[in-house]
Figure 1 (cartoon, rainbow, N blue to C red):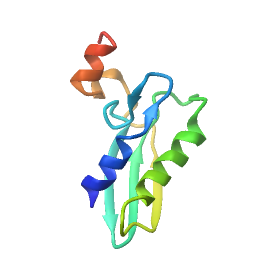
Figure 2: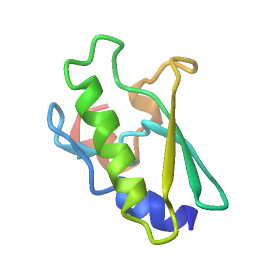
Figure 3: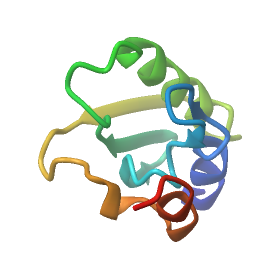
Length: 96
């Protein structure tokens, strides 16, 4: 079920950079217990103007997976996100 949640999360594109939040490395972990998903994630900056919108998208994406009826989001700032956490494709496209 984790893979299905990751697949849904990978459809969420950060509008500021044009890449999905999984490829950007913003999703640190997904765990599932019964019908509840827990997504541990960060944002590229603490002052992200789309903070609430992105969290809503994450919750909606997890709830689209059959069998998931609840989603908790654990928004963390440690470790702080940096470009080295992104996929090779994203790093190359962003010139990192």
